[in-house]
Amino acid sequence: MHIRVINPNTTRAMTETIGSAATAAAAPGTLITASQPSCGPVSIESHFDEAVSAVGVLEEVLAGEREGADAYIIACFGDPGLNAARELTRAPVIGIAEAAFHVASLISTRFSVVTTLPRTAIIAEHLLDSYGFSHSCRKVRAADIPVLELEDNPDLALQLIIEECLRAKREDNIGAIVLGCGGMADLTPQITEAVGLPIVEGVTAAVKLAEAVVGLGLGTSKFGDLAFPRPKPFSGSFARYSNLTLD
Ligand code: 5HY
Image (cartoon, rainbow, N blue to C red; front, side):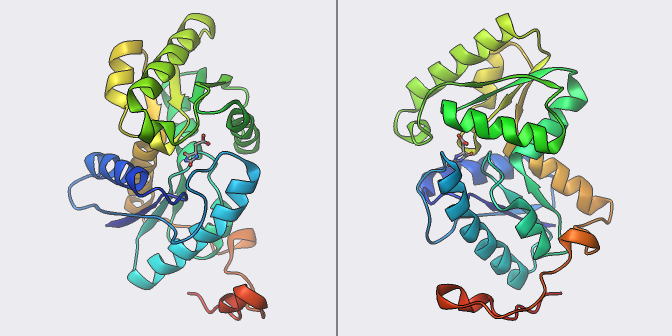
């Protein structure tokens, strides 16, 4: 099985962190390819960043289709472009936020999320609502760090994330914590040891869910709203999408 793990931002070091975590979680026989768009934001911290990065995600899925990927992971906690990406392929496309929420709900009845900035915490709340997990999540918390602090100042970032996780454990009456950033993919062991709660990390959760869906012989439905897009002309810099023929 070949899984293409897409980091929607354009920070190579974070793509490598994500790829290493995905590879460590993968079963024998699962090949992980970590990629990122050639253009887009260095980090995704707003609705604007997500909207722009979604085009890069779709480009990476189209590249994966040419290379025969068996599954895709969108390794940004906002799951940018998730359903649009699903329209482009018969393979499963798993967002790390959706994956983490599902796994957390299998091991606890209530969990909290710890993400980076307060404004991206609100975006995670929107996802919880749209995926149907609002009732299961006690609180979405922010360590109040920009995403790239995870790369530029990792020791401080880890300390602030652990402190917020410990506040969640003390205050939220929860059974698990979800890490709310693809860039946290390598921090699970240290956070687990420091906090003493089950820590659900989205990249690794998505790898195992992708393996499960492919193993069941399932993929993205081509019936209803996830069918291939109707071919049509596109103008300007999007002309390359004109009359896309997909199968
Ligand atoms: C992510 N941004 O997982 C999100 C994290 C966030 O560049 N990769 C990013 O805070 O939403």
